[in-house]
Length: 379
Image (cartoon, rainbow, N blue to C red; front, side, top):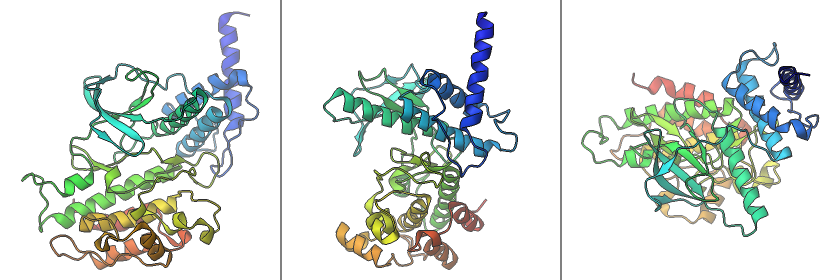
C-alpha cells in the first residue's frame, strides 16, 4: 500500500472516530472509550483543527456552536484519558523583557514580554510540588485548561495567544495580549484628565461596562465555559475602553458533564461568592463547584463594585466568616450609589437583585442580564 493510500485510510479512520465520539445533542456525553491509544494523538489533533475550521460539520443535523462545545469536551477527555495535547498547542518566539515579575498573584507570577512585535503578558504558574510526577500532573492540568481557553473568540473575552515553554526552563506559561489600561478597578480610579470619570459620565461608562461583562459571560456560557472567578480584578479594559474578561485559571469547561459544571478547585474572590459555594450541602451539592449560576451571582456583586468602587460588604470591614453568614441568610448589599451620590436606577437594581437570587435556579442567565442592561447603553 502506498504512503498516500495509508494516509487516506488513516484519515478516514480518524474521521470515523470523531463521528462516533461527538454526539448530535450538546446535552449528551462525548465518548472516548472507543479511541485506541495509538490513534489518540491524531484524533485530538483532528478535533483541535476542526475547532478552527468547523465546516463541513461532523453531523449534518448539528450546528457550528454545538459542535464547538462538544469538540472542546472531546479534546479535554482525550487529554485526560491518554495524557496527550494537540501537536500545535505550543507557540514559539516569545521573549521576556525581564526575568523579574511585574506582579504576582496567588497562583502565578506575571512578566512583560513580546511576541511577533506585540507587547504581551507572560503568566507563569507557580508549581511547588516536589516530585517529577506531581509537577508533570500540575503542568498537564494547566495546559488542559489553557487549551480550552485558546479557542475562545469574542470581543469581550481576552484572547489567549498560546502556551510557551521556552521562556523559563521546565515551565509552561500563558501568553496574553497586554492591556495597557489595566483592569477596570484601575480604570475607575484613573486620574488621567482624558479618562477620569465624572458625575456627568460615571453611570454611562459603568452601565456600558456591565452590559459588555454580561455579553462576555453569555458567550462563555454558550461555549460551555464557567468563568469561576469574576470580579473587577479579572476585568480588563482594552484600548477602545471596552471590557475584556480574563484570568481563566479557574474558568472551566463543562467537559466531564453535560450540565456546565466546573472543577472543584473554584477560586472565586470571597466577596463575590454565591451562597452555594459557601455551604454546598444547603443546596444539595457535596462540594463547592462553580457553575454558570455562580458567575451570574458574581455579576450582580460586580455591579455593586463598579457603582461604588468597593467590593460588596466592604463598608463594614467584615470578616469572611461574617460575610458568609450574611450571604447564607439571604442578605445582600443595599441599592448602591456612585461616588458622586447618584443612586443606581431602580430597574437596574431589580436586575441585579435577580442576578443574585438565593436559589441558583432562580437567577437570571447571563444572556438575560445582557438583554436587561442593553437599554442603558448610550450608543
